[in-house]
Image 1 (spheres, one colour):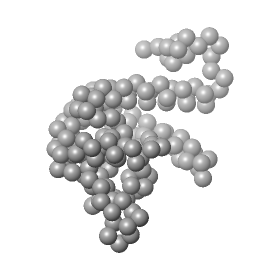
Image 2 (cartoon, one colour):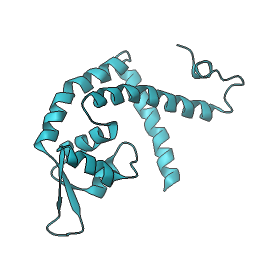
Image 3 (spheres, helix red, strand yellow):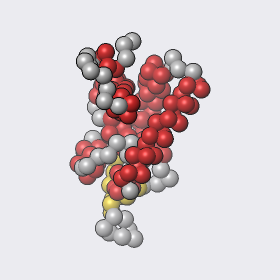
Length: 158
């Protein structure tokens, strides 16, 4: 495989090493995500909807809407609309908190659990298809490096 500068037909090279890293991360994330987008589309959901369902699956109980939003892998500007579509599809339920009526709690429905069970094997297989060629140590190194980059990005936001 060609390096990114050849892939995107960059004539003058990257302006900096940092630019090359950022563009490689963006390109890689796009290439990985398109496979998940296609798979989830076949099941009638989006990547973001899957993320919400997995968050709810891993929670000890119903979560406030803003807590769901804060746990998302990618920032979603309109969490309410995302939850509306999941509720309309019967994949989540929403109820007002009994202790604070201003808070709306979201929970995974039985249909949402069924959908996730059906996606477990295909998602695991896609992970293997996309990254199974890498050695465990390479994956640990990659995780450490992208975590370090993300920590800096998070610190600049604070």
